[in-house]
Amino acid sequence: MNINHTRDLVRMGTVWYDNAGVSPEKRKEDLDALALATWSFVRAMKRHLSPESEDEEDFKKELREKLPAEQAEAIINAAHRPNRALFDLGVAIENLPMHWLRKNEINNAVTIFEDNLGSSERLLTSPVPLFYGRHTSRFLFLWLSGLPLALYEPFSSSWNHIGLIPAVPLIALFLVGIDELANQMEEPFTILPMQAFCDKIYNWCTEIVSWTPGDNGVEINEPTDAYKSLSMNVINIDMPTTNGQAAPVITQESTEGSKYARVFTNV
Image (cartoon, rainbow, N blue to C red; front, side, top):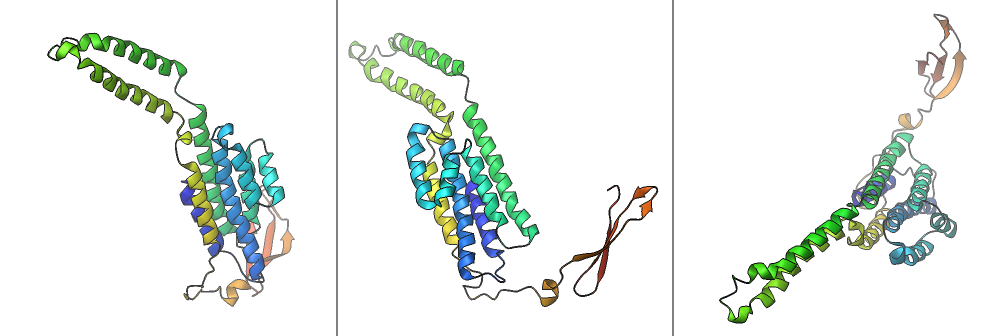
C-alpha cells in the first residue's frame, strides 16, 4: 500500500500543481521537496522497523545525501522518525499552490501512510509468545530423539540398519526448517527486501515530479476566465436573532456581482 500510495500522492501533486504566477524553478523546487518528503517517510519507516545495528548508519548517510541538511537532522534527531517525516510531508503538501479540496485529497494518502505505520508497528511489537516457540522446539527435540527407535524396525531390511543414517537427519532438517521459518515470519521486516522497496519509491517519485502536464503534446484544458474570477469576499455581516438565538447572516459577493448568503445558527 505504501508503494502504491507514494506514487499516487506524487502524481496528484504534480498534475494538480497550479502554475499560475509560478516560475519553472519554483515548481521544480516545490515538487522536488514533495518527492523527497514522500521518500523520507518510507525510508524512516524502514529504519523504524529494522534492527538498529542493521540499518542506522546507512539511514543517516542516505538522509544526509538526499535531503536538505536541516530537514535530515530533524528526522534523525526525532524520537519517532516516521512521524517527523510525515510532518515534513504535510508541510510540503501545504506549500503546493493548488485548491484546498485537492490538498485534502492528497492528504488522504498521508492518512493511509499513518495507518500502515501503525499496523506495521503492531506486527513488530506483538510477536508470537516466547513460550510457544520454546514449547515447539522442545517437542521437536524429543520427537526427533525418539525417531531412530521408531524407524529401527522399518529399516531392518537394510544392512545393519544403515538406512537410518540418512533418513533421520533428512526428516530432522525439514521439521526444524519449518520451525525456523515460523520464527522468521514473526518479524517479516528483517527478511523482506525493504531497502529495494525504498530505492524504487525514490526513483519513481523523482521521475514523476520531472514530468509536466502537456509535455507529451496532449492539450491541457485550462480553467475558464469566469472560473478564475469567482473569488468570494465577505462584504456584510448582520446579526438578527431567531427564537432568541443569534443567527449571523454572512452575505458574500463575487467579482461577477452574484450574491450568496449562508446562515449559521447557534454560533
